[in-house]
Length: 279
Image 1 (tube, rainbow, N blue to C red):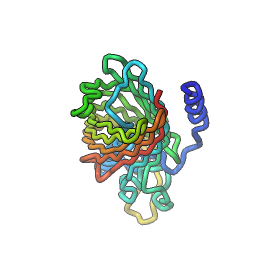
Image 2: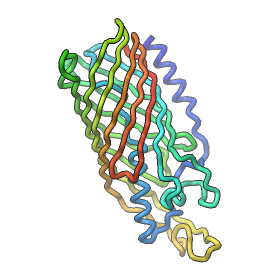
Image 3: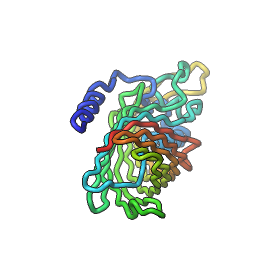
């Protein structure tokens, strides 16, 4: 079964539709290099940091040295797509703005447990209507596991980054705390609610940008008015997230749903649903 699952994941990765720049890719010189453009870049980067922040994929358990989980999920994060910092930042022009209200992603994650309570995890996510991927690695340590009257508790840290963003560079370091409790419904049927808190340190900056497109209203413009190239400096972003989720397992198969509410990320919120195989 493990070999079969690995083959399925390899096929999904190979078939991810990486096309030419699409409407949800970035074209940041549209923001402009003046003070308003710099402020818009900070707002857009803050909300996008919540977009690529990793989800938690279930319970705070290692399952010992034999623990191994492989899953495929779908995630979406609401963005304030009508705000100027999105209409000007995306590849689709403001005059032809027909982008979704969410960033949609296809997610592949893997978790491996060890006998002393350590869990190593990784994820890769492809964003639909873009050429962008995000992904990273991390580790959790399970403090309590399998105690009858107490929840399972784990804490950890990891790295996550954006790839294929062209105009945008973003890296994240995340600290996480997770609590879960497993309830047995019928023999092999498990119901697992979980709660998590995450603090993300994100760093965002642009590549070298340039371009000039006048707009007919005579007051607005894209990029630097003289056409000179410019760059958005490094922006440091802090985001706190609270996650609530539920996982249903029967035998080696599991289904999970979780929602993330990021604070100070301009009303963004994320949802993730997935299917996993546990070995």
